[in-house]
Structure formats: structure tokens, C-alpha cells
Length: 332
Image 1 (cartoon, rainbow, N blue to C red):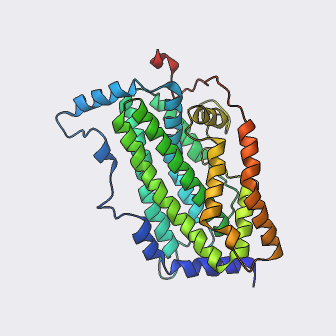
Image 2 (tube, rainbow, N blue to C red):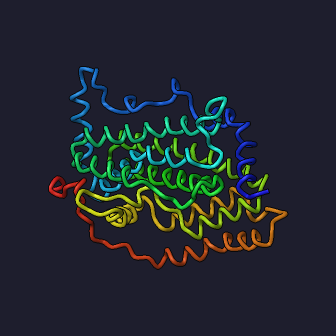
Image 3 (cartoon, rainbow, N blue to C red):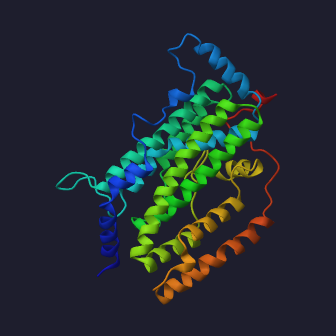
């Protein structure tokens, strides 16, 4: 049987449990938090006082912090690109004879949860008065226009490796931003980022469970897909980010340097995620593998040590890039 059809059969097999996945890993709309729960409420008489307090606390946050927070916001706001990409994965079908299939339902519900992140962070940035919102909006539109190619094709195995990795990476980023905000005395922003991080962790647990189930059904092919993605290297969702007047991707390296400089997301975090996935999926214990998959396992088990040596030699530039999103004059 062609490999593509095996993957499709596996997706159809897992789809039978999609309602269980939704119930376990996602939260009903009426019960989950909404952005208004965490921001000054414009219907309240003390709205302006609350905004003033938010803006005063925001003044204590340093330049690189704002660059990272803006970059994280733009990444979250590019959600239409990610939903479009995932809806094209083999086994996801929006229009069947009996209606949308279970995977399409999962992705719509997942998108609904993710959409709140960009809404919340965008409104916070707007109220903070610390960033050039028009430039942020231009970058967001560019990122959506420019699209996104994680190198997974329509392969569900590769796509689920990617989402497992990326959801954990976004958890780390938002959680570290929360810790920094608390360090600088902004407990409200810390809570905002902490609660977003919690969503990302739930989503990571879901996608990594999908991979875990596939390992039990089709271990060799799943392992080869994992190896492929790690050899290719996981592409960050914001890798094509650019400012107004720039070409595609020009802002990403400097944004990444800001994140490394303040310890929000580093090369060692990338390695740590790989190690966590190796353990979570118990690849050292897999059995009945093909010879090719055995070689893939050996590669994946040795890769963290190799990458750690490289990461430890990396030097992050100390000089800050001046972004159009965040004007340095505001920090004098």
C-alpha cells in the first residue's frame, strides 16, 4: 500500500477519538477566559484610571522586553496563516459528503483558543502607549501576506512533530516573558503572559499525544518524520517577519537576538525541547523498527549533545537593533 494511504488510514483511525481530544485538551467557549477578563474594561467608570495604572507599570519594562513582546504578539496575530496551512494537511477535510471531518473540527476549535492570544496582546500593546502600533500592524499584515512554510508539506506526521515542538516553544517564550514582567513589578502583564502560556502547554500536550498515538501504530515512519524535521530544523513561525520598507525575513534575526539577550528563548531551549520530545515519545524504547528507522533513532538520541556543544559556543550580539515597532526615545 502507498505510504500516503497508510498515513491517511492512521489519521482516520485517530479521528474516531477527536471528540475525546477536544474534551480533554480544549476548554468550552463559555468556560474559558476572554481578553476582557484581563484588561481594563471600557464599560467601567474607572476604565481610564485602570489604563493609567497599566501605562505607568509599562514604563518600567526595558527595550529588549518590548521588542520580544511585540514579536510574540505579531506571531500570534498571524494565526490565519497557521490555520490555512494545517487545514491542508493530509487527512483534514472540511467538505465531505457528511460535512466537515473531525480533524477540521479540532483545528477550528484550536484556532478559536489561539485567536484570543493575539487579541489580548494586541489590546495590551495598544493601551500601553509604549509601541508604534501602526508599524506593528504593518508587520503583522506582511507576515500574513508572506505566508509560512515549515517544510512539512501535507504530511500529518511531520506537521504534528512541528506543532508539538512549536507549542512547547511558545509556552517557554510566554512563560519567560511572564517571569520578566513580574521581576519588573508588572504583575498584571505577568498574569496575561502566564495564562497564554498555559494555553500553549495544553496545546503542546494535545499535539504530542497525537504523535504518541502514531508511534504506537506506525513507529518506523513516525520516527523517520521526526528525524526529517530535526535535520531540517524547526522553522519558527515568525521567520519571515519584516518591518515596513524591508524585504522578507530581515527582522527575524534581530528579534531572535533580543529574545536570546534577555533569556526568553535561546538555542539551549531548542535543544531542551528536543530532549523532552525524545523522552515523551520514548524513542529509546521503540521496537519493531526498520533498519532506516533504527538509524534515525540513533541520530535523534545523539543530536541533543551535538546541538548543546554548538549552542554553548554561540555568542549573542550585545547591541540592540532599533525597531520601528519600539522607538528608543520612549525609553529616555
